[in-house]
Image 1 (cartoon, rainbow, N blue to C red):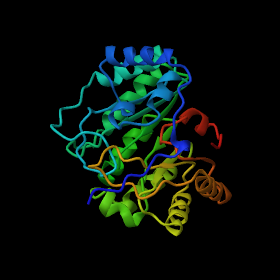
Image 2 (image 1 turned 90 degrees about the horizontal axis):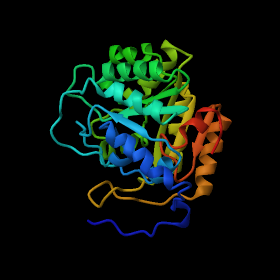
Image 3 (image 1 turned 180 degrees about the vertical axis):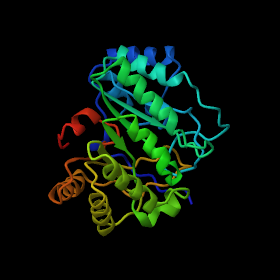
Image 4 (image 1 turned 60 degrees about the horizontal axis):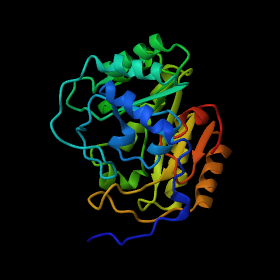
Length: 289
């Protein structure tokens, strides 16, 4: 059944701060043959972020090995990793003079290490090219491999992000190839292995979750010592994706954010337009949006 159309509320309209920076960022990305999750995931904030001269780089290609029902990343033929890509990302970070660089990837279950070695190489390349830049990586679950996760942690990122995306009840419908408990275990391992690395996670609202499930999810994330939490509104990329069940009000986002803060989550960004990498630098500094 085709989902019922719901008019987008005013609070989900995006402002562009500096349009002149859009072409500058795009030219650098295109000239270095890089992918961004901003375009790949059809992020609603991509124009705003580009206008601030920021972007979230997406490594390991533009084709994903999984088929999450909320995601706009394409499926198709999986190509071998591009070993020059980490150095081009580092070049872009330096050219854009980024204070905070975010690197994510498609999921690559076809690779022995899930692409962890390319993450590690990218971290090291950015550190060498731009030593003062805060490095955040948004990683897949690496199919539960601790060795893969360890190689990323040993490369020395400042922040490791892994999103749980939704409440556990909805995993089969929304993330059929992922395991909720496995994602929590990955986040637990980050703090257990190196407490100096900040751990981060996020999830979406509007997929059909109920209030009690949201509070339980926040409790679970605090239980594995997550330092930074992002909560945002789910927006279907197309009619072929998981349907939108509800637009959640800004007041409800504030309520969830305050709850997370009240139980000790260090930094929380909770509002409809928040995405995992949105205002990543401000959020990492403990600014609550």
